[in-house]
Image (cartoon, rainbow, N blue to C red; front, side, top):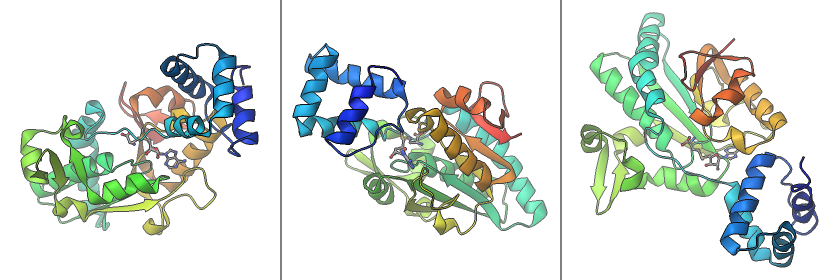
Length: 274
Ligand SMILES: C[S@@+](CC[C@H](N)C(=O)[O-])C[C@H]1O[C@@H](n2cnc3c(N)ncnc32)[C@H](O)[C@@H]1O
């Protein structure tokens, strides 16, 4: 821990009764620098005093700890590889093995963009291949507010900037300036609260058992310190089927490589257990 961070940990613990030591030092440092610039309090002492004196600033700081930004088909390479390689292979495998269907978990789903994007791909491919199989997506997040948005399934146009016109016409309903996800897709996604750092099991209780073919854990790991990242990755490892895939954010590829996973496609953020 750097000397810059320590007084902030103490401040949050003693004044605001919150343990922020789980967060990565570099992530905390960025938030501190960002707030210093925004408030024009450029010395560490000045900003720390401000944070200690104004509870409203602790609220702002906390809100920066939980970034829920997402978009449909966020990482184009990942979704292309899913569409062209992984999902077609899974569909064939399920057809041969007569297993019930494809099981997917979006483990930090924010407002559901990643889960619904994957549902769109499954729907298209199952239809094209005339496969008599099913798919089910469990989508979880620690934040009940983003899950409410996910369940409503209404999005501003910026969120669907990477969606093709054909998919917009097929899978969305335009409502003024916004777009709603079609009910045919909504029914395949089950949203629930699940904290990846809690001790309440290795996968969402709604899924009954893990054995997932695909787990997304993207754009979340870099918030947390090394030991918490490892614990999340271990949990996900246990919830994956033996040949299952882990999908992360592009910026998190280096974190995963050192952790019992191997990259399935060069420069992608898609991994399998070693
Ligand atoms: C930046 S969003 C990522 C959304 C999506 N996975 C993507 O890549 O576009 C990070 C999400 O992780 C959630 N999150 C943070 N800590 C979590 C935890 N311990 N367990 C579950 N979700 C968590 C946040 O609430 C937020 O919605």
